[in-house]
Structures are given as structure tokens and as C-alpha cells.
Image 1 (cartoon, protein in one colour):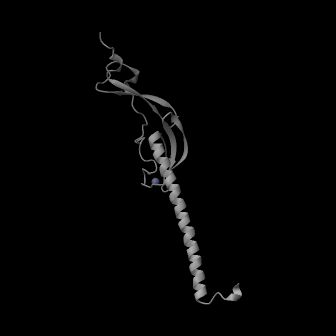
Image 2 (cartoon, protein in one colour; image 1 turned 180 degrees about the horizontal axis):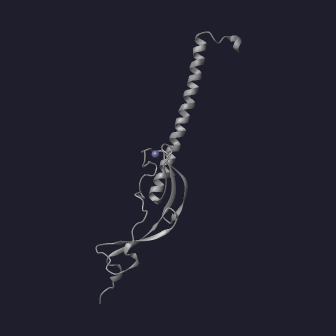
Image 3 (cartoon, protein in one colour; image 1 turned 180 degrees about the vertical axis):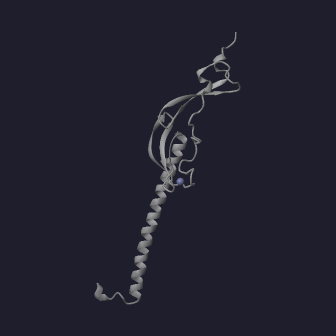
Length: 150
Ligand SMILES: [Zn+2]
């Protein structure tokens, strides 16, 4: 008695979702050319992007900026997300399908970016106040502020 493995011997079928939302089946042949006249003999990964689904999404592949942010996103399937990305530095945009892990990483990068922005704003507010105080102290020291001003 032998298990029947003949149907899965030399190739794998993978479903690939295109940015358009269309799902295509990509057949990978392990080691031999197709000898029969099958319709899948010419199957290729048409329009497959070089994008790595696990790459760091906040990094722009064009200019290296770390400011890439999502414009739009939707659930591609139970574990992947289709995301429209944009780089504010070079105007690069791309729609891609990315893994849950990459999206979670991206999410925490965006949180960090938001925190950094808030910290910058607080520094800026603080700097403005410090400048006001310095100006006031300077005015006091140079007798530009006299009791009559109060
Ligand atoms: Zn860029």
C-alpha cells in the first residue's frame, strides 16, 4: 500500500492577491518543465512586485525617508493588509499587500512618529516660552519695564 502523492509531487500552488484585489493562482514548478500541454505551463508571477511583505513599511524604498505613512488600507485576507503608502519627502506611492507582522511593526513606528512629533512640539512651545522669559528678563535688566507698566 502506497500513499498517492502524484498530484503534489513537483509543484506548489500559491494564491497571490494583486493590489487590485484580484486573486491569482501562481504555480511554482520545482524541477521539471511541463511536458504536457497544460494551460498553466506559461504561468508566471505577472506584475509581482519586488516588495517584501515583511519589509519595514515606514522606510521609503525610493529615497530612504522614514516618514512613509498609510493613506488607505483594507484587509486583504485574515492575516494580510492591502495598504496604499505615501512618502511625503519624494511623493513615492505604492499599493502593496503586507503581512500582519509588518503592519503591526508599522503601527508602532507610526505611534513612535506621533510621539516624536508631540515631543518636538513641546520643545518648541518650551523654547518659545523660554525666549519670552529671556526677553522679559532683558527688559527688566535694562529698565525697559518700570512700575508704571503694571
Ligand atoms: Zn521617499
